[in-house]
Image 1 (cartoon, one colour):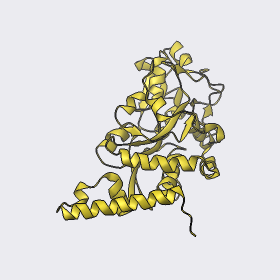
Image 2 (spheres, one colour; image 1 turned 135 degrees about the horizontal axis):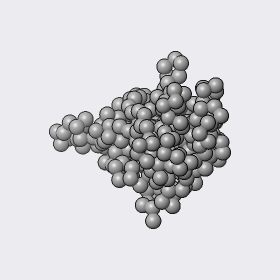
Image 3 (cartoon, one colour; image 1 turned 135 degrees about the vertical axis):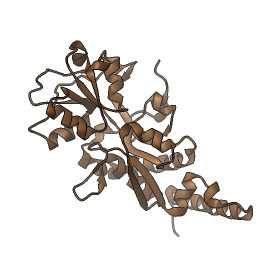
Image 4 (cartoon, one colour; image 1 turned 90 degrees about the vertical axis):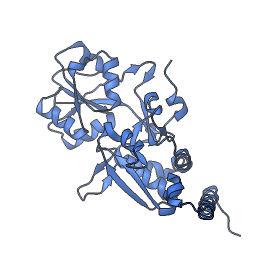
Length: 296
């Protein structure tokens, strides 16, 4: 007797639902391609489009041109569990990802974007896939002695770099860093170049990003250590990354969540993310509902 897992039963249910939808649309004389949801289109075509912005180790091109990183790697594995075999990738700037998601340029933002209340008002998030802290990339020797956002705020001559739309800009402003001190870059690579060239004294980013940049530029960049993560409006900067979807695509988000939850419970998850610097300590410990709730 053949046994079926919960995943098998769910896939069979989804397939029957897609078939019933197609038959109903045809009976009513409706073009299924016009009436179907994003999840139904993905199920019909076996193809999903993921949007990303270059930032090591979350999403980046390898030397042979392949898209790698935590976000795409997890997305591919989850969609494979959903029987979606073709993953198209669309590059954008980080600050434009949510706008272009809502405009339909892609179906999912797959960079491990932090779940923040203000973002939750624009899109819907999967459950968290990981958690990570913040850090500074500085020139060797950390000549300005920067170990926190407060250190930057104390000296008006210090210039701090950050990527447009990144949460680190909120941390900086909440810590007293002025707009005159902030230099906004389109992506992590140009921000790192800004540090190396002396245009900024530090680049604020997720600690994993900082560590990856330092590993690639050991003679020109250093990770500021120790580093004091800020607490802003009662929230620690140990934030949780997840996948973003359009508000009307709840069924797609829910299907993604089911398979992501299964993956997080297996050794396969840690094997998948370990090459990018994540460990068991980075496993999420809060829910999307908790993270989307406004700060008191």
